[in-house]
Every structure is written in C-alpha cells, then in structure tokens.
Length: 482
Image 1 (cartoon, helix red, strand yellow):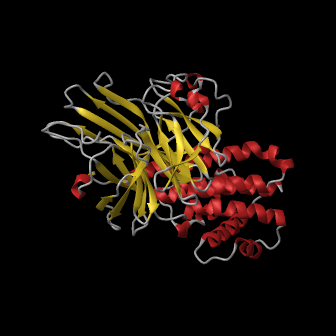
Image 2: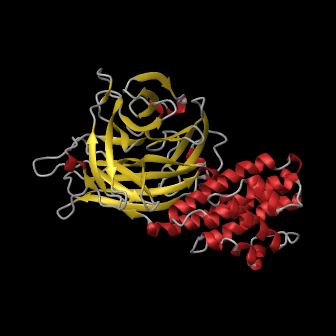
Image 3: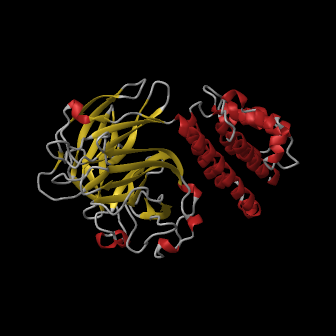
C-alpha cells in the first residue's frame, strides 16, 4: 500500500514538472513516463518502474478523453493484477496527473482546469488513503502539493502574455443612463444583474449584454427598469451574486455591513448571512467595508472581504494592506477567514480623493478565484486623476486559514498570507491627452468565445456621470479574454 501511495505522489510530482514546460499538449503527456530522468528527478520511488508509470498515465489519458470508458473499466483493463485499494488510489491519481499534461490547449484556462482537477484529487486522496498510514507519508504528500501548486503558478505566469485586454466601451453608445454601477453577475442567456451603490433602496437592474462570439467585443447593451422596493433606504449596494437553485440574488451592502437575499423582483426575503461582530459597521474604516462578493456553486459557499483593512488589523509589510477573505458555508455562517495581503500602492495618496482596496472577487471553482485590486487617485483639479487595476489569480488551498481570528493581521508573518499570481493589469486617467478615467468596481464571467477562450466583464462606477460642462465621467464596460 505504501508503494501505491508513493506512486500517487510520484505521478503528481512528475506531472507538475511537465506542467512547467512551455508546451502543454495532449498527445505528449506520456513523455513524463518515457523520460525516466524526469521521473527520477520528480522523486519517483525506486520500486516503481517507469513502465508502470507509463501504464498509469496511459489510463489517465483514456479516462479524460472524450468518449472514454468508465474509470472502473479502464483501471481493471490496464492494471489487472492490482488490488482493489490500488485501483482506488490509481483512480484518484490518474486524472490529476494526466489533466496537467492534456487539459486543453488554452494557456490560462488549461492551467485553471489543471488546478481544479488537482484540487479534486486532493479531496479524493483523503477519502481513499487508510488512516493508519496517513501520518507516515503526510510530509511527502504536503511537499508534492507544494510542487503541484508551484507548477500551476508557473503556467499562470506564462499565460499572462496570452491574456487580451479589449478597449473600454462607453455604455452611452447604447443610451444606457449614467449611474454608480458597482457589481455584476451573470443570470444566463446574456442577462446580467447589476447593482448601483447610490440606488435609493436595495435592488438591482438587469442588463442584456451581447458580445461578439469571435472577438469578444461588446455588440449591444440594454437595461431594464430598477428592481427593488420604492421606500428610500441608502443600502450602498456594492456587489451581487446569483443562486439559480434558489432563484434569488444576494447583495453586499457597505452602508450597514450586511449581505442579504433578494427575490428576482428586488424584494428582500429576510435571509442574511451571519456576519460576525468583528466585521460590523463600527469595526471598519468608514466607506471601506464589504465591497466584493462572490459565490462558488461547486461548494455552495459565499466569499467576501472588506475593501480595506479592519480597524484592528492596521498595515503589514511595506505599507501593505492586510485583508480577511471570509468564507460562509451553506448554513450562512462563517467557516473560515483566510489572510490576504494587497500589493504596495502605486499612486499618490495625498490628493482630494484616494482609495486602494479589493473591489471585486470572482469564484472560478475548486477554491480558485480572480481578485481585482483597484487604486484611484484624484487631485483637487481633477486633471491628472488616475486608476490602477490589477487582477490576480489565487488558490485558497495555498495557505492555512486563521487559527485565532482575534489577533491583528499586522502581527502575522508575511509568509502566512495567501500567495497570488498577477494575471493582468491596466490603468486609466484624465489628462489633456487621455480621457478614459474609469473606476472599475464590478467583475463577472462573460460567455466563452467560439475558440473556447473565457471572457471576463468589468463595469465601472462613473459617480452618475460626475463632471462639468467640459467633461463627464463615462460608464465603461470592458472585456478581458483569458
């Protein structure tokens, strides 16, 4: 049994070595097994022959191939002499190893698919490995997981050059009224729910956004009337998620630090997430509370964070802002807090308006997320105003959740914060030669293009078209192609 567990470790380690190569192609996945030097360098146990690894990887290819046999039949046919327990462990390891070499040909989404498959394999590992030998090999498993995570980060870094940032498009081109659009979520059929942080009450708009399926450019935008109650109550709605199984949306309110459920007609249902007292209105810096909200359908969990640090957390590192990624489970209670450290500021802060924080999060599945860090700097004259947008990929499995949530994050060692990989960045500004200033606050998945690439849609808050007779801020929509 120990040999089989070591094989599991070896397959993942070998796969992570392969994942760091420049080319990730399905028809070359067997190179891991055929190159015995790679296998040895990856820490393969001497008792496991390269030919055996070759058989396992070939089975992995068959399992994930379109129209393949079932996992059980493949395992039985290619490993006839092994025990039932060996087959179970092989069933766990095969897809995890093979997917890194043959997920898809798309750089970013291929790496993401690999990350998701490895995450699934980690869960299965705990299910199948007998308790009596878990402690014995735990350190080896932990080291292998680190190698796999590092390999995936390398792929993500290399994929940056393939990420495309399309030009921002003004929604005024489709006669969409100016507002304070701060959050967006897909509803299906090119419909999106959008919140306005200056709306008279809690609720949302529905926008119909059509993209060119080949190039990703926005073709048209239409907006419905506001869906919400008529009574005035400044909620400061910052972000929104959609739960299709409940036919409802949940909206994060920065004004009162709540996350509440709404019907598809914009009426509150009475259900709220149980926000701990340490995230109450009195515990945050004014106007820097809940800004980002996302929902992971595969785990039925909500994730949020404050825009900036809590009062108790201060700053960490070199003038960096520490945040708490908060996870809510299906009982609507907090189940974990994960420490996240923002990047160092880039813009001038002693100006009329300045903000630096996480404005949006986007769940991708299997504990993978995109996080948008937004920094803005607006001088008194407005000329010279700038924004800096940086989008990062994170994996919540890369760091331990906080054991003692009462301790200030300023005391936490820097290596205890969540690692992250920058996917893309861009800036906007207001000057004599550049008038594309945009405070992007909302982010969601758009449709997949005909070539399989994934789109991400960003929207900005124009402060209801703030400006004067010469210039007004515009409500931009921007598409990123992964």
